[in-house]
Image 1 (cartoon, helix red, strand yellow):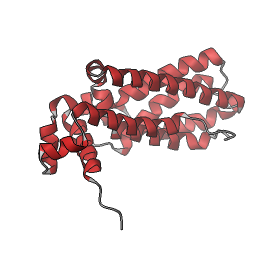
Image 2 (cartoon, one colour):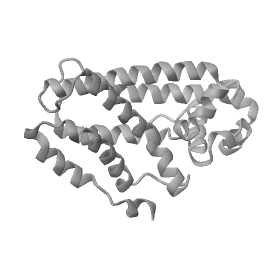
Image 3 (cartoon, one colour):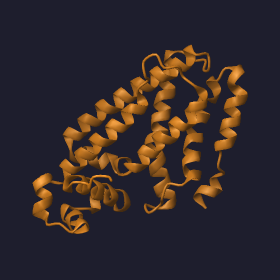
Length: 220
């Protein structure tokens, strides 16, 4: 039997839910306490203010993301695992989507968080480049260091803005669906198509076709 979540864990879970569905700017510590049925004083015992809650949620997000942006030592890159990798990555982005729905506001209002986010994004870009160069070493992609850097930046832009695109076209109450997730993965894979070596083009094209979802099925 699973252990009952602590009050601290419940506060974080409730905050994440409210931030994602209603927007971090629209939620106060009183809203969170009321949602949980606890007193504001009880909440402040665990977190002194809302920025400390946001910072703790960012720590969770950062830890989960860095697992996927780090290439395990001596691990062979595998094209078949790529879709599953991206699916998990986009799922994490969705779980913490408030971070990118109001990122500029969050970073402007919390200089310490802004510094942490800059370091996180720089590490992520660096690790993404390493992953692409590993695919090049494996003979799956044909690119140099400059192209790997450019591709990493473009992928990061898609990853960080895909959730915002979904909420602005579908609404903040949207639940992540398989179709929406598949199209997000597709958007990333097509960025890599021009670098795929001939021996793998058919397999990558087949994967892209399997993941493609017509735009009208997403926005209409």
